[in-house]
Amino acid sequence: MKIGYRTLKTALGASLSILIAQSLGLQFYVSAGILTILSIQVTRKRSLISSLNRIISCLLGFSIGAVFFELLGYNWIAMGLLILVYLPILVRLKAQEGFVTGSVIVLHLYIAQEVGFALFLNEIQIIAIGIGIGLLMNLYMPNNDLRIRELQTKIEENFGRILMEYAIYLRVGESNWDGKEMIETPEMLSQAKGFTIQKLENDFLKQHDTDYYYFEMREKQFDLLERVLPIVSRLHQDVPQGRQLSEFVEELSKHIHPSNTAYVFLDQIALLRTEIKKTELPKTREEFETRASLFYLLNEFEQLLTIKQNYLDELTKKRKKD
Image (cartoon, rainbow, N blue to C red; front, side):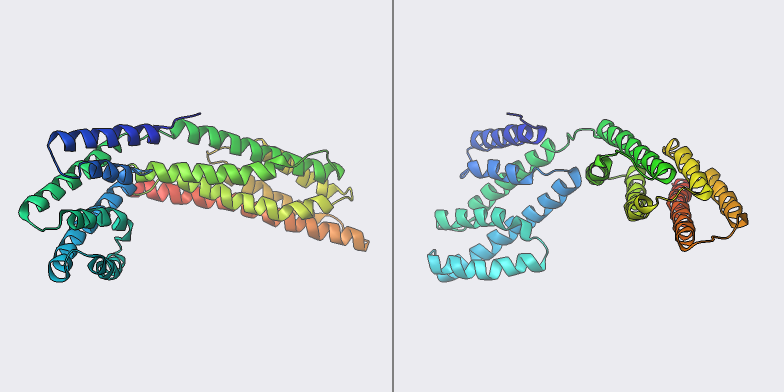
């Protein structure tokens, strides 16, 4: 059984909240622990938003509850009507996340059978302790930089392997490749983007994260690699142009990394396109179809590199603004 950091924070935070609330002699002190449990989120940003929603819902719940119970009495009819009014208001305020928390405060009113300053002060202290400890626990967030770098390295290795296999197909028309990289890569890209989003939401000062844009760029490139796979696997005719493209793709497979080499390969594509145009025209239908497929692949690989170049250009602009 594995216990994660969030579980540890929840256990410690809830225990601490209950201890403080009980030490102060507050009524319904266990509710402070419930508020802490609900306030601990995956990121600091989500925790802060969640806490604000819960504060709003608690104060609103106390106010509406006081009015309904004093006017209609402390009974189940008043409770039902209160919820019918209370929940739509929270939805309108986009604070419905705090409905359960606010309902706890409402139930305290129902149990106490009275509305007074002492009870109001008691609830304020419970809210402050429960949500405050939750925010305090969420100050610690694990650093995912190492995991992000590991995923980046593995994704780049997979890209290199995929391109190398494409080069083999273009050269000999077959391969014993099992294609597992085509399954692994989208899963790793999704994980990596998730980690970068968490990283961004844990740092209130950062407006954007370069790692997120990097993995978004790789995601677009992978979509293109998936798109050209059927074309590559159907090319079986050995032609000089295919061997030229194979050599280009093999060289490209050895240079998959974050730095800027896209412009070099874009220049090579321009030269390769010019060389292919200078060769003799196809003599048979099969040669014509093969030549058309090769030109299509050349354009797609050019788009692959353009995606990388556009990413680098945008990254340079963002750094200048910063």
